[in-house]
Length: 294
Image (tube, rainbow, N blue to C red; front, side, top):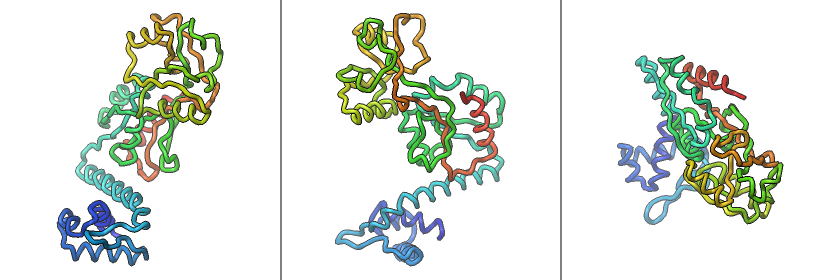
């Protein structure tokens, strides 16, 4: 099947109107209709049914649409790389870095790579966890540093760079301060500060509290500065943290209590699509990042 047929199918799927789709594709309605008909014959399925004011995709069309879209996106991305190689252009490696992973990655990771390989260009974008995964799934970036692996896991190659246990941070007078480990049940009716929606930690805490029938008051916050932490501890409240990464000398009386649940962990991952064939430069980047595995 030609890639052109998939492009035509996706445009018609989006517009659900032959005239509109043909106009955007700069072809005649007859040519579009013929392409869809040939695709239906090749797949032995009906892709669209007529209705009074247009057409609607069939169940089979809805099933194959994301597969076709991935094929077209991968093809377009690959062709861009081929064109750059043929012109001897340096193709930038595009990397999405989850904001939550940025502080846990080595400060020198990107800086030293640029020094060691000045002819390999890196384009970084710092985004929320789920945005990083979305950019990777849509082939808008080549790699993503994320908290835990993207889903579905069978679509991606994943290198786990670091394991970090989550913990609760409280001052020494907090009721939880005497505990050595935190159970999910300890979060009952707790005011707990954490990163908000769009971050894996928030989603993990929501799921864990729901699964254990625990009512916890998650208070999203966009960032933690000195005054933010100071007010939280002054008000005898709790905040989610990373075990082993202390806040510094200004918070000497703070207790860092790890969760007993092993799932309450960050796996800092470098991920890329399995269908994505790595270029020579990208192989160098992956092997370089592996040097930072702990």
